[in-house]
Image (cartoon, rainbow, N blue to C red; front, side, top):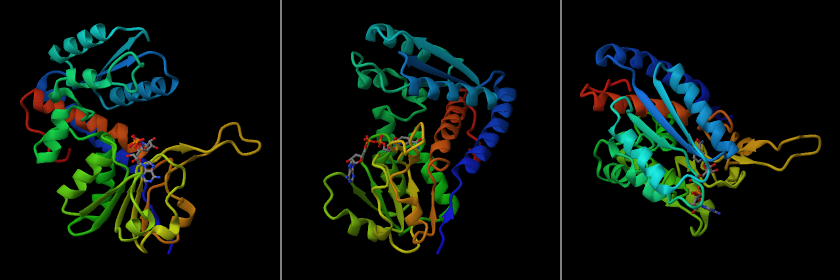
Length: 297
Ligand code: NAD
């Protein structure tokens, strides 16, 4: 068997196109563009790249992008004051504070200061709680993107065995919650799980969100499983390479011979994250403007 490659890049491009069209309709109805504010504290190079691509994607989707770049020594009081100002600004539908923050700033307090109705990253405890009890809130972008890829491929997930490897608040836990809501039978595996290979073996759906290069071996997988690889790991550079290759948490080459479908790294889950951020922002905009959220979002 050669697994089908789940093309997250193409899927994300279609989602962005759909969001762009609906953002145009929102502007006509609301008399303003949907707006996303992104706050970056400091000059972490990876964060700068993420913030730049979020800005470009927001503008390309026909939405307003408000960028706030603050110096690395910004006080918590100043950062909280900015978030307060954005909470009160009617032109801002979504607020994202780029993580990680410099060490002197408490991430939990900063996330807690964002209005839950503008928390398009879905990290606020109110949104985690809403997800847990099945209320409409905001779901973190990466697991929601994984879910879109899974339902696109598999349709109804009822009764399927799903194993999520990793239990972070950003990926593993919300992923498990979404799968549970879709009536899958869900196991969350983590660093203390005993005999991970046999846990993975029973899964029709495997979502790997660990951050360890090619940890999940082909022989752990059940024949015909659908594999979503969230991990992004850079291998040490091979001879003659300037930078090492990017790989996921799953041994892709091996898994291709056993799984029915698998997301590649790069080009799988990664591109979905920003596309879903745009989607969440447009959902926030409709809710904030008192408009019905379009079904196709
Ligand atoms: P994290 O470090 O917060 O969590 C990792 C989880 O893996 C932990 O819950 C831990 O219990 C588990 N774990 C660690 N070692 C393990 C082992 N040996 N066996 C089983 N479980 C083990 O990471 P995260 O933020 O959830 O991210 C996970 C990976 O996903 C990272 O590679 C990250 O770069 C990537 N990621 C990608 C995107 C994207 O857009 N594609 C977004 C977020 C995270």
